[in-house]
Image 1 (cartoon, rainbow, N blue to C red):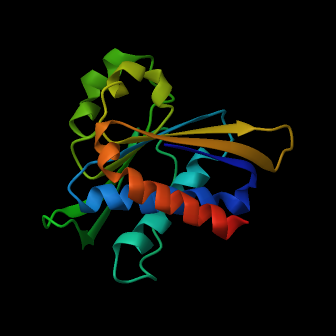
Image 2 (image 1 turned 45 degrees about the vertical axis):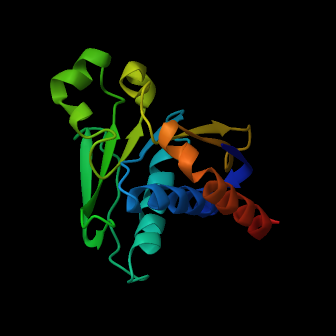
Amino acid sequence: MHKSYIDIGLDDLQIPASDLAESTALAWKRGKYPIVLLSGNMGSGKTTLVSRFVQELYKELSSHKNGPKLWVNSPTYTLMNEYPLPEVQSEAGEKLSIFHFDLYRLSGEAETEDLGFEEYWGRRGICIVEWWDRAPKAFSNMRCSASVSIYENGAEESRNLNVEWFGSDWMSYDSELASILNRAKKEIG
């Protein structure tokens, strides 16, 4: 499944963040471990999108719609940030943690193996990976992924986003995912 967002400003990133959060929450509540892969130039809005996504995800999964303001920042130097949300649980009772990775400083596949990141990806909580294209083989067989590509469209304050949900686990949610994306389309205009 695929959706494009055209001429989105930083203030409008809430729209794709909400769609992504609703679809990711759907999978996580049912025991899947979704992974969101982000690509785009430096400064294109990846971390801003992640911040909005995490806030929307909390609203989607928690009974407390006005929950804690989580400080979401780029893990460029730490390589991974964890945002624990212990009050949010899956149907199986698993407490949610969101793992935010930034692979910008890595030189390739071998480093991700050395750091043990694959122990998280598709196996724990919800993972978000910026600069995933530094280690593409690590993500080639993910069963529940969403790829977000952010493209600047010439205007400084505007960008285009393409989101693609792929992997075998999404097939069982096709009709629900289509409903989420069609509803969002109507809300936008």
